[in-house]
Image (cartoon, rainbow over all chains, first blue to last red; front, side, top):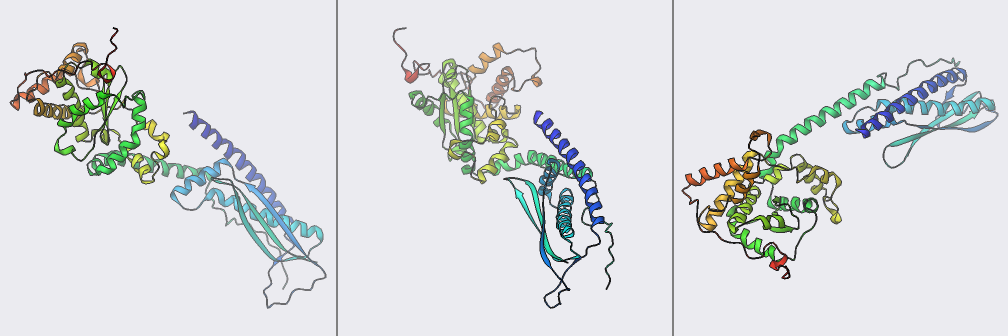
Length: 144
Length: 287
C-alpha cells in the first residue's frame, strides 16, 4: 500500500514538474523560433555550386533533456504493449528544436546570413533501466 | 529565388493526445490484461496439474523444499534412525500410482503434531506427531492420507497461481540457483495457511484408509488421531466456517466407507517401537 502511495506521489511530481517545464520550454522555443526565422537553413548536394561566401564556420548546438518519472513510467507501460510513445514524442521534439535554436542563435550572433547542410543527431543517456535523458546535437555551416 | 521566412504553426511531430488520457489508456490496458491473465491462470491450474511430468513435479518440489523446511522450523533430524522407521512404515503403503516418485522423509523437530507433503515426494513428519501417535496403525493411516494428497497432486493444485510463477522460473533455470529461492516464491507459498478443499481431504482420507487396510488387514486404531481430535474440537461451530472437515464427520464418512467395502473396523493393534519419542529410539536413562 505504501509502495503504491509512493508511486502515485512520484507520478504526480513527475507529471506536475514535467508538464510545467515542458510548457515553459515550448513557449520559449516558439518565441525564439520566430526571432531566428530570417536565417534560412539550406542544403547543398555534391553537384551543386556553393553559395558565395566570404567566411564559413561550423556551429554546433547541443542540448540534454531529461525525462520525468511520469514519462518514464508511461514508456515502461508502453513497452509492454507496443505502439507510439506519445509522452516521449514531445521530449524529442523539444530536444531537436532546442538544439537547432542554439546552433542558429550562435550562428546569428556571429553574423551568419544562412546555415548550410545542417545535421541532427540524437543519443540517449541511459542509466541501467529506463531512459533517463536524451541528448540532441545539431551542427551546420554558417555562411556570411 | 527569394527566401520568405514562414513560421511553422503545425505541430506534426507531437501527437495531440493529452498525456494523461494516453496514460489512462496504458494503465487500463495493462490492468485489464493482468486481470484476464490472473483469471485464466486460476482456471488453467486444474488443466495443467494432471499433465505435469514426474520430472517437473520433482523439480518443483526441490525448488519449494527450502521454504517448506523453514516453515517447519528448519530443524530437520536427518541422521535420526526414526527416519528409517517412518520409511519402513510408509514404503509398503505406496501404491502403483506412486511407484515412479521417490519419497524423501523429513523428520522435523517440533512439538506440533503434524504431517504434510509438498510436490515431488517430500514427506514431512514432526516429532510431535510421533510422540502423540499411539499405534503404527494410526501413523500408517496419517502417512497414507498424505500419500493420498501426493497421488492426487493436491499440493500442486494448492499452489494455485504460484504454480505458473514456479514453472516460469524453472524454465528460466533460476528457481533455486545456489540454494537461493526467489523471494517471490516464499511469499506465495505458506504451508501453514495451505489447506485443501474438503473433497480433497475426504478423498485423501479414503486413499489413506484403503492403503492402511491393505497393509494391516483391518481399519482398527487407524482413526485414533481423529478420535482424539474430535474430543477437543468445538462442535457448536458449523462445518462450513472451518478449513478442515470436522474430525467427527471424517470418522463417520470413513466408517461408512469401510463398511461399504466390507472392511473390518477392528483388529489387532500394531504397537509403535519403544522410545519413539526420543532421538534414535534412545531415551536418556537417568529419568
